[in-house]
Length: 273
Image (cartoon, rainbow, N blue to C red; front, side, top):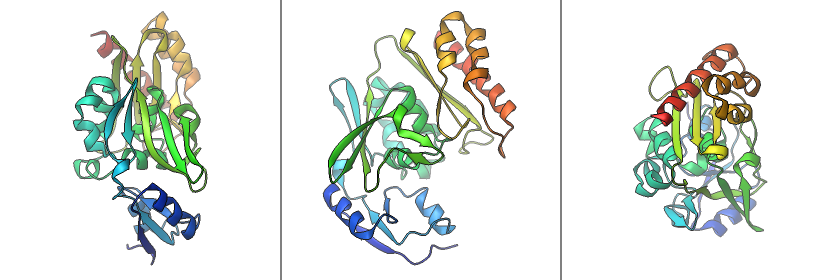
């Protein structure tokens, strides 16, 4: 199928993009990589009168050190992240997660900002920024706003972004010495969305376990995090209280909870090794 007729505008900078958006109205959409938006338009799942192309805004690209964090521009592609030496050194979970996203052609076009704004609960980046205590930087005509990952994902495809507010970057704290990151997921085929996935940061009392594909948002398994000090079985058992996955076309909720325990045990074994 093809999309319904719509208008197109290209922004030259962030201010221009925000001005075009307000002029076009709240039903207009920003387009970056377009890997989710174009598919939705082609299937006519939404009525979008105007798309505003932000792909030429160079200030939204790139990965750089900013003190104790990595700042990653919203237009940075999954492939850019996978290939970055800075990411591999300071945010290993991101380096592990990027190659798991869809297929190579999509990784060269899809962007981290687009993924976070879309907020698919089965996607890797929302769980990664949650596990690593990332901060989403959003811009509007009022200036920039910083949103903790824990406050950003509100529901199924729902975020804390306000009308006419766009993601411009994400900041990820650098891994501390001795910190271990492990990303695991189970999918029916390579490139499919995961039935269940886990992003684990093992850092003593600051360890975090973020699961994806198990709810309307990525889920921070706080009970299992607390139980990590009591051993593998205790942490695994605690997932019964942390996760309540719904049944879907991929697996039943009970199966997803079982797979989450499998992934946690594998992640703990890999971190120990």
